[in-house]
Length: 161
Image (cartoon, rainbow, N blue to C red; front, side, top):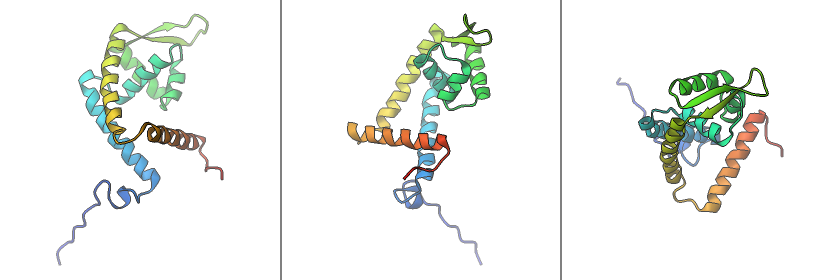
């Protein structure tokens, strides 16, 4: 007898569609989005984690590497590696902190600001595409739900009734 090949369901169908599990669909969406971001960022020379680090550093200056790691949902070790690579590329600079001995102040260089502006333009275009077909109110609803779902995940617990 010949071997029967079963086709996998396509994206958006069966359990990969509206009838799928929320967790799986979130992962599917996140993986697809991350791939699109990585592809778009190639022309800037940044990876998605580097873009996240620069974005968080721009939004929250004067924070430590450990703080940035928490905000960007990365481990301190991963953030340390990312920052070292950004420093080697002359996109950030680190200085001793005036008030805290071991803490180092991290800041964007002019080159870092320039590449971040280009990268944000590319990523914001993806965000616009992602939100296409949703009203402002629907987008706010999705954002609120994602924040709540992320908060519950970080707390590590089940939702309260």
